[in-house]
Image (cartoon, rainbow, N blue to C red; front, top):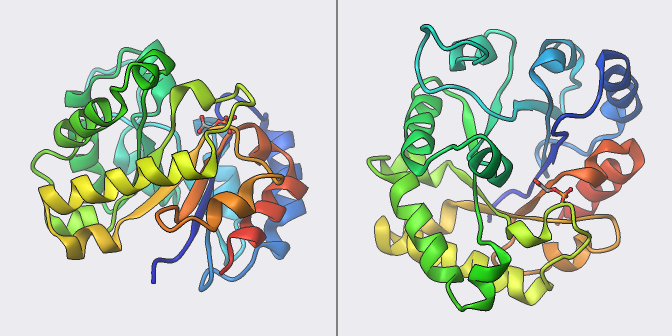
Length: 251
Ligand code: PGA
C-alpha cells in the first residue's frame, strides 16, 4: 500500500501575509499524516515562515535548489539552506524550469543525488509536450527523461522518490489528461522504473499526476491504479480547495 501524497506547487505566488493566511486556514484541518502526505511547495521567501508554523500533518517543500553544497552561484539556494529551515521536500525538474530556465536532465540528475544525500525528499517532474503526445512520442520522451534523471541513484533512493507525471499541455491550461490517459502514462513510468531497477522498487515508488488538478477531478484521478497523488498548481492556492483535495486523497 502506497500512502497518497498531495503537493501544492505555489509557483511564484503569495507574499508572506498571504502565505500566513493560507497556513492558518488549513493547518488544523489537514488529515492525519498517517493517511496522506500533505505538502506545500512555496517560494523561498516564505519557507521559513511556513515551516515554523506547520502543524503536525503538514509538510513544507521548495520548488527548486542547486546541486552544489555552496559556491559562487548568484541567486541560487542549496540543500543545506533548505533543511536548516525545516524544509522536507523539494520539486526537481518542473517543466517550467526545464523550459524557461534551461534546466537539463544532467542538472536534474545532480540535484536528485544531492537531495537524497542531504535527506530532502525530491518530487521529480517528467512530462511530454503536446506535439510529442500527438506524434506518439510520449513514452520515448518520458522513458528518456527517466533514464537520464535517475542515472546512478540507488534502489533505496528510487523506492523513496516521488515522480510527478505532468503533461506540459495540461499545466495551467484547464486541459486535464483524462484519468485513463494519466493512469496509462503513470503505469508506463512504473514499468520503466521496474525495468531500470526492480518490481519491488517500482511498487514502492509513488507517482503523482499534475496538470489542472482541481476539486472537480481529484477523486477520479485518485481512483486510478497507478496514481498515488497529485502535484497541484493553481488550485492549491485556495485553502478550501487544497483541503478538499487532500481529504479526497485519503483512501
Ligand atoms: P496546474 O499546475 O495545477 O496549475 O496546472 C501544475 C504544476 O505545474 O505542477
